[in-house]
Length: 425
Image 1 (cartoon, rainbow, N blue to C red):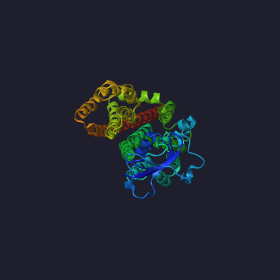
Image 2 (image 1 turned 180 degrees about the horizontal axis):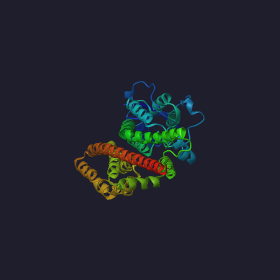
Image 3 (image 1 turned 120 degrees about the horizontal axis):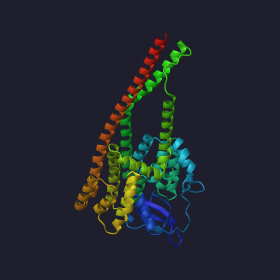
Image 4 (image 1 turned 30 degrees about the vertical axis):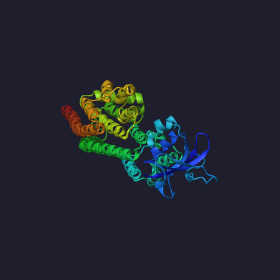
């Protein structure tokens, strides 16, 4: 196992430094904190002789006779970055408009971060390397997070200040990785989630491209026809379009933009919206299934890592990326501390589908809870992608019918107007 070196203060305020063997930086940091040490610096040991001479059970504290030069990185400047939340105007207005980061960049970041952490590279060095390779908003966020980690804070302390970049699902999975000491694996898992999200969005774009193209072409044709008619016969009415229709479309586009960018970031609005989606006959099972898949992977990984059941259930509920589901799980979490079984607690919440409950019962009886939940996740992910493709196809048909009806309306109106002109002549 890797050897880490640290410095800090003990419970009496004395300066201590030493080496400790551990599986990961997160686990070592928690172990030192449990022993009452306030850590100021923690990282991979640079050079210390034979690492086998260091005990893996406890740190080796060395009282320095001469104060050593500080190893604090130069980029920290006069102090560590602030931990308090940014101003609401930044997070709720400016951030969603101009401060986002594309899913492609986030996918690359988490994929590379997971590989580097699993290779034994310390978190601070990994963030600095990936930050130098990034640009724009992501680079500044990673560099700030690097400073947080160098100050002895978890990586989530930096991420949580930028909700326009890292969604609640990402934050839940990152915290789950920090809690379970499996940050590298969790980053890889999060990269897989983002990749599936990108693939699903690309699928919907492909399935709806032709109807969107027809709809856009119909608008261009109408505007072009009006231009030609006015050019050939100044003062002619051309192909008329009701003004209320243009106004309705404009207002709908603005309302959708405001709702997605701003209102859905409010927990109460998000909870009601998620509950509404789950209640829709065709869309509801797909949305609920995706949330069950995300919950299953997160909870199963935490359960396997030995995270306390109550904490694992909370983090799993956060990872579901569905406020309606989370609101049902949280009230029954404490029943696990009271001695209730996992299946019994899940059933009482009313948040889980029969498939999940059956798998949880089987996993609880056989002791392979993680394997059962992974199978549930794979089932719901495959089913969700199939339904999403069907939904995209139905949307395409709907758009074609809508455009066809509108073109028919324009043709009839044009023909009746032309016939009326002929009658007057």
